[in-house]
Length: 193
Picture 1: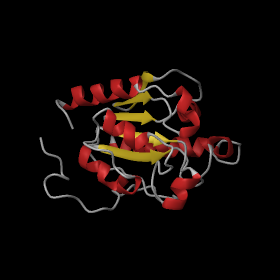
Picture 2: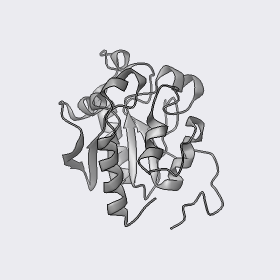
Picture 3: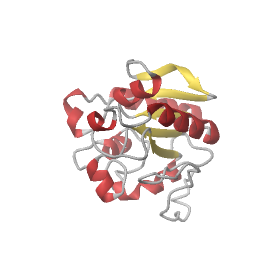
Picture 4: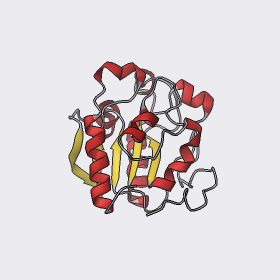
């Protein structure tokens, strides 16, 4: 099956998110997504470049290609093209940027952030919501847990927790859970991206 990019490309603009007021960068959300990746918030480099996972030390884009969710390593600025492969992006906190220690120091209304994320997932109903670190998953779920598929769902959307691709977490990175997610996404989609 050819994706929309191969069939003639798509405009380089994010899908509407419906919850964009105050967002530092638009969500990439639309109907029919296979997986939506959710980070904590934009890092400082991502904020400066207005692109998700833009820090050169972050392995996000490399990992997507290595596990076969994208056909090649995309540049961070190409993030709107992820919809061509059934992938979306958002962050738990859309109104601030920086490292998690700053984001989760008590000045952000996490109850509201959780409510907004849950609303987005229920609205767009991706097959999977994948948290891109155990820390952001713990902030959303209210408890720490391991990586992989979780018992709970949001509506029909499965929840996965992945090891962080951040350069700050490089020594703890394990591609295994990312490979497991890619297999799950392919198996439930009936084929490769």
